[in-house]
Amino acid sequence: RPFFVTPVPAPSVLARESPAPHSFRNFTSASGACSPNTPAAGVFGWAEPISAMSSGRNSPAASDKEPSLSQLFALLLQQNADARKDAQKRQEELERKLDRQFEQSQEFNYRLLAQSYELQERLVSALSTSVSAIQRL
Image (cartoon, rainbow, N blue to C red; front, side, top):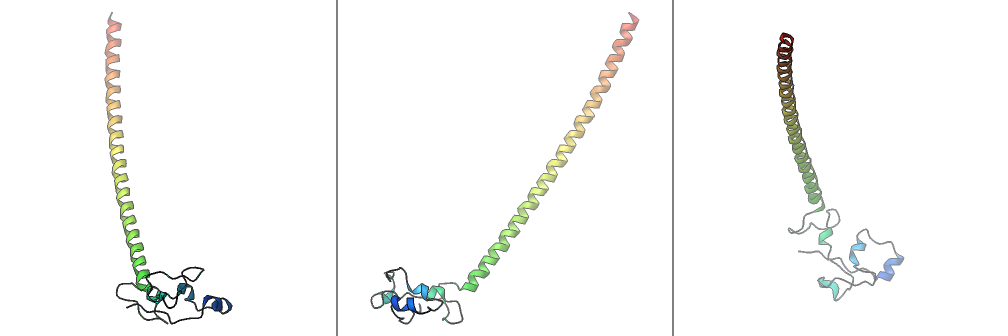
């Protein structure tokens, strides 16, 4: 159930006095207009429910529908921790993928090197055979 602020002096009086820390929530516009869904709008055009800003010490607990500030902060911390874990997992997966690609690249390079040595040996053998044949002529 929402908690409503008790009536406070008109905005012109508040301008001369030091407002309460939460008084900025009591005014929705410079003219003192109030949102139409506020029950107190008919009597006090500038009163607004404060259930959304209940934070514990000086105000009643928030309704079951609205999380408290500490709950929102805890949720934010949990989401941050989850995001870090997900990012760490993605980084580890990418590192493993990069390692596999590097190993495959190394294997490919070794196969190419072995083939080039084999072709070089064949070429030397063919040249030797050709030189021997030319010398016999």
